[in-house]
Image (cartoon, rainbow, N blue to C red; front, side, top):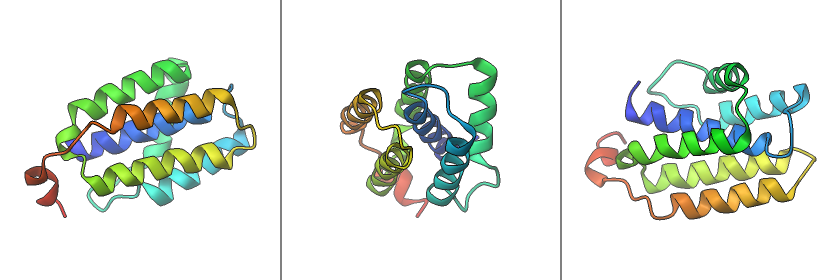
Length: 134
């Protein structure tokens, strides 16, 4: 996969971590999660379903929210040279939408979102890389 695809998969993993921060993701939550990720992270540069991939990986690994988050942030850092300001803004919006759609707002979700904001803030993409993709 390309660095941009890796970034999209990673943010999908973080969105999944937020969704499961307060427990197992239920069927209705999965459907809402799928809709948000599909609508917000659709990219013309690849032809695969991020949310389905994320569910398969997370279900197979039985990952918890913290493990999923840490793994995804590692991937974001590795590919951060492609992280444009607009993509960063989109990622923040996705995370917040995922947290707000699920009825069980929790302290765990809020803490994970704040952690994400702090972790992603210092990451600055390289304009040479991401501007060539626009």
